Image (cartoon, rainbow, N blue to C red; front, side, top):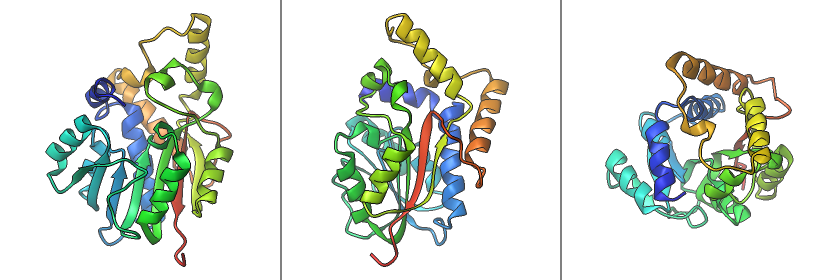
Length: 247
C-alpha cells in the first residue's frame, strides 16, 4: 500500500468491525493452539498501521516490520525504536529459527513471490513455532480495488493450503472467514462491473453506526471461531500453521 491508502486505513482500522474482528479472530486461534504461552517473540510482518502489533505488546515481545517509510514511522511512534524496523517480508531481519510466532495479516497477496515469503516465514520461525496468515479470498471477487491496493492475487482454500504445505508447514486451521459480509461483497462487485468498475467507495472504508458496527464485528468473530465448523466460502481466508518441531 502507498501512504494515501495507509492513511485511509489508519482512520478506520481501530474502530471498523472488519479490522477489529480480524484481529480478535487471530488472537482467538493463537490462544487456542497454545502459541501465546511464556511471552513469545511475535514478528508482525507487513504491520501497516500497527494496531495488531500494539495489542500484541500486552502478550508478547514484538517486532513489527513493514517496507513502507510511512508505516515504519508510525510503528516507531507506537512501539518505540526497538519495536519496529523497515523490511520486506521476503527478507526478514531476524536470525534463523528465532521467532516464536509470525503474523502476516492481509500481506502476502501484496507480494509477487508469495512462495518466497512463506519460505522466509518458515526460516525465521523456530521449530514448533506458529504462523498466522489472513488473505482476501475468491478470485472471482477480483476488482479494480484489488489493483489499487496492490494485490497480486486472491486465494482459494486449495491454493492457500498448497502454498503452506509446499513450504513445509503443518496446518492447525485453514478456513474461510468474513462469511457474513460475503453476499454483500458479491452484490457490490456485480454492481461495479455493471457500472463499469467505478472507483471510490468500499465497505472497508465506511464505519457503520455503532450498533451495526458492533453486530457485524460479533458476527464476523462468531462465524470464524467455531472450531468444528468450516464454511464453504467467505470473503477472506485464515491459516494457523506450525513449523514442525523436528525440522
